[in-house]
Image (cartoon, rainbow, N blue to C red; front, side, top):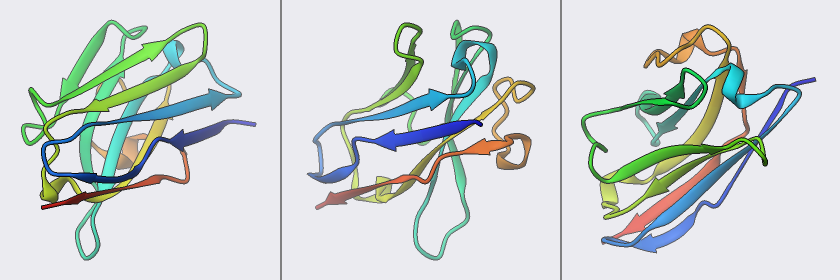
Length: 124
């Protein structure tokens, strides 16, 4: 059974940093395309970042490029999202997703497995 468990969300002031974790079980993240998505109240879910090709390749949404970094730890089978220079508009529920064929896809529909999500709130 595949499980993705996110952690690391919280409340932070604008300009601050958070690191989200996505611990995977039932699959090996390096054999899948991994993605982070976010959804703010009243808005559609949007792509944030992806890690694929055995964790060697990354892709980012323009809105987070240069501020967020996606990475993976093979030993822990965990994917991270380091978020720096946070802005109030980054406030959202962040979810981790996985799929063996969603190699860098920014489309949520291409991912078969999802975690429950973790809330990130950035105060101004």
